[in-house]
Length: 462
Ligand SMILES: Cc1cc2nc3c(=O)[nH]c(=O)nc-3n(C[C@H](O)[C@H](O)[C@H](O)COP(=O)(O)OP(=O)(O)OC[C@H]3O[C@@H](n4cnc5c(N)ncnc54)[C@H](O)[C@@H]3O)c2cc1C
Ligand SMILES: NC(=O)c1ccc[n+]([C@@H]2O[C@H](COP(=O)([O-])OP(=O)(O)OC[C@H]3O[C@@H](n4cnc5c(N)ncnc54)[C@H](O)[C@@H]3O)[C@@H](O)[C@H]2O)c1
Image (cartoon, rainbow, N blue to C red):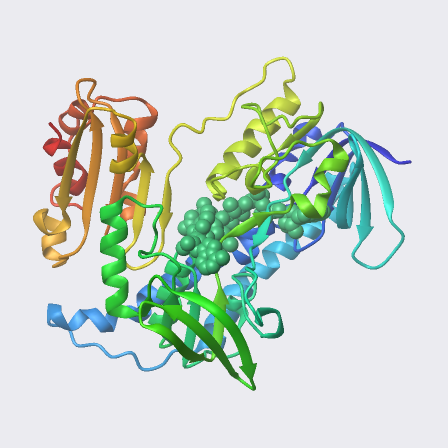
């Protein structure tokens, strides 16, 4: 049975571990899908390329209130789609080729197939090309097998041509109407994308607010603005789905009782599940939590010696910057077994690239109050700082939560233009435990630039 020093499962964030420091080790790399994983092929990168395009397409819709009348002449969907994937697909195939044939990787054997554990540090690979299974053992295994879209059990769904985020960005034509099931990150981002490109969008959400994981005031503001752009159905469940030709019919139960909705395309975006089932993690002795995530300690060690995990297969955050951070930790720990480094999950930020943008780090006000911490809360509107005023923004704000006495920031939430960029000094303040008074007054803030939103919010804290 072939034995290697290091076996890597998944070429998303896991692929980045293989630096030249590993050139003296025999390595096996197993990938069942497209090289580069979720972020590159069906996640962060294509969605943000579509979001940027959507932001450009949405400009004429908002410019006339500034006295600039613009019209959107045409959206060339196939050109947009093919431009985006024409840039992404070669990166994926280039990455595959590099690992497969380049002399830098003469110590790496690539297996294109599905890895399944058959014992501790032992896997079977079922090749994608239908060839015979290959058994591999390894001294060290890194599990970076990610997750996939969750498909809920809805009557009729499996007989319908529905999409997930894996497929919807490659549509052959834009429908007149799209229905998005879910009210989280993907729903918020792709509703913005498709509606800006001219598709009428209905968002169906089980609960009473969109982006419910955000601070209550941010979620409420986003839900209110979303309802002005899209047909948002809250507190609504899909009872059943059926299809006739190009029309998908949804039977809904909501505040107005039972209704029927007809749509051209259905996007199911109700969360993701880790790929632990595909791996048969228990056969490898790997512990899982009730959500199906692999259990790891602060050094990214699983419950089996020599087996490490990183990213969406073990991380409740499901964010690329977390997977990248954990990959760097695993890389260090493989190279320095006597000086292990721990992952830092203290202040994990996130952003939702919709319109408006949202960014957050740390606790929501509700979470801070539930902890019993004595807090100071500040809210600063974009409208009341010079650049926000110039933009005539009337809906955006920053909300900060600090611990009274220590002056430590424990939560930051921004909804509005460039939120994902504006949040960074606040992430820095939290990560380096800087006193908010010092952050506010210990440096210059360029006038009249957008970060004055952060400066003014900090100054408002008691
Ligand atoms: C639409 C969308 C947009 C997103 N946008 C953002 C964003 O803007 N910012 C952000 O931070 N995060 C974003 N994310 C989340 C981000 O993409 C993931 O957190 C990140 O890609 C996870 O990386 P990973 O390496 O853990 O897993 P993946 O990148 O999913 O890699 C896992 C790899 O393992 C392979 N694999 C799985 N099982 C097996 C097996 N048994 N054998 C062999 N191979 C296997 C898979 O084919 C895959 O290639 C987005 C996700 C989606 C879906
Ligand atoms: N900008 C980013 O960083 C970004 C962008 C996209 C995706 N992501 C990652 O991908 C993950 C998946 O995104 P997502 O939007 O699918 O998930 P999500 O967890 O953000 O939202 C899931 C939504 O589906 C609803 N839902 C759950 N089960 C349901 C069911 N059975 N029926 C109806 N509704 C149901 C939830 O109430 C919620 O509104 C995110 O958690 C995020 O970590 C990140």
